[in-house]
Length: 113
Length: 117
Image (cartoon, rainbow over all chains, first blue to last red; front, side, top):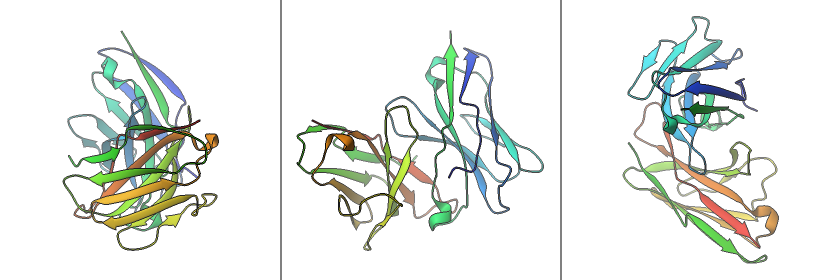
């Protein structure tokens, strides 16, 4: 079972920041938070991951609370092409079954003009 | 970034026939590959994990005799759906774990849509 809880859907205006929350209250000390997204009828795309520090890359920023029980993915300037289902996943960084990506239901983000 | 390809991208077959789907890591070696299945409006469900040169590990409820997985090399894994039936119609997605990555990064293919008539 997925270890995360996300809202089923969110809307965002084009050009505005999209903030996608994720709860992972049972996260273990060695588990990372990963974010993937899936555009309709395509394979999932990696976005970003982090352990406890905030992370930023060319796609997004990841803010992890100090207690690590929740996080927020931020798309700073959402475009129509960012419309997708966003998955928040916690997992260990190494191999074995603990390192498998287990997908929950995700958040369907709709970016509107 | 690392690229994973799947072939074919879509396939339509008659009930009772077998279908083979290929998954390739194009620019990296993958000791482990994964097969997922996704039904309409649902999330991805992990079917099995395959390691190069060894037998696949199937998730609970997935029939290993129906979904044959072969991971013959560090860049190729195949999924064969044997005696396919309409209920096997789904979006099949593979992913590959980059053996060089210290963060256990996993890259996904574009998926194969299987329709069984």
